[in-house]
Amino acid sequence: MKNTLIAMLVCCGAMSAFAQNARPPLQLIQTIPLPNVAGRIDHMDLDAATMRLFIAALGNNSLEVVNLTSGSVVRSFKGFSEPQGVAYIPEMKLIVVTNGGNGTCMFIDGDSYNFVKSIGLHDDADNIRYEAGSKTVYVGYGSGGIASLDVGRGIVTAEVPLAGHPESFQHDDASNRMYVNIPAQHEIAVVDWDAPASVLATWHLDSLSGNFPMAIDDKGSRLFIGTRDPSRLVVMSTDSGKIIFSLECSGDADDIYYDAALKRIYVSCGEGFIDVFQRENGQYTREAKIPTAQGARTSLFVPSLNEFIVAVPRQGNHNAELRIYRVQ
Image 1 (spheres, rainbow, N blue to C red):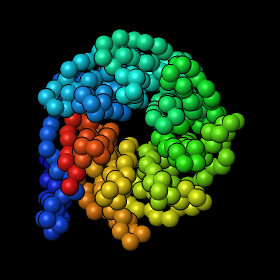
Image 2: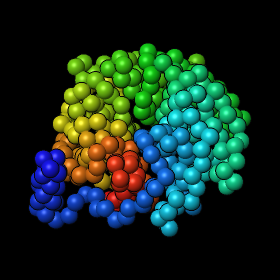
Image 3: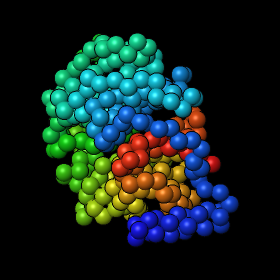
């Protein structure tokens, strides 16, 4: 009862703030049930051409395929070992899934859903990112490493050892540099992918730790990093590694996205909120704190659809679900 009352007061406060600003930055427009998904939900990616959303259901050991147009699950299949990351490669119609349990990176045909190839990456294959320009997949794995994979040939082209397990990372195409969160070391590793690939520098976060999510504004030379202890949004210069701003944020931040069109930062937090930060005149302020659900920390921002998607895990008798918000 006490928790319900607190949640109601938080919602009322958020709604009051929205009323003053005319409308909220995110408006809930659709909810899609995920009835057969139990446990933790990890990362997601979208095939924009078919409006299929691919979800790495880690706790369920499954890949869920949701049609956003019909609002329904069109495929749910097993055969994974703690799937954590997922990326869709539209040019080749390939789904790539990383597995934390056995360290494999699995390639799956996007039309037939047939298994195509598997690449072993030691252990705990985790975050994944596809760079269309170079046709390269980057995967963080193990107790400290990140690999580049040639999608066409299906091989590892380079591996860079790191000081700890990598979480979220971002690639700057212009410099061919990558910024990698290393939570165990409270630092960001700066990786140069020009041969030979290596770590150029490490930037320490001082008293901040739990740096899991990250986003980049490459044109503005800014990194946005979520820390969990304490709960902060950190704005860092990609030129110097200097922390420019540190703002209060909701707890258990797990995904961050930068909206270049609106100069906003969206942070999905397991505490049960989406925090929305606004950049204006070189300053950053928290514009809104939108209630979601406990544990709803995984999200995906789709600029082409102007939508923000949050995955809500199963809670008691309430099924897992997707909540889709319109950006406004």
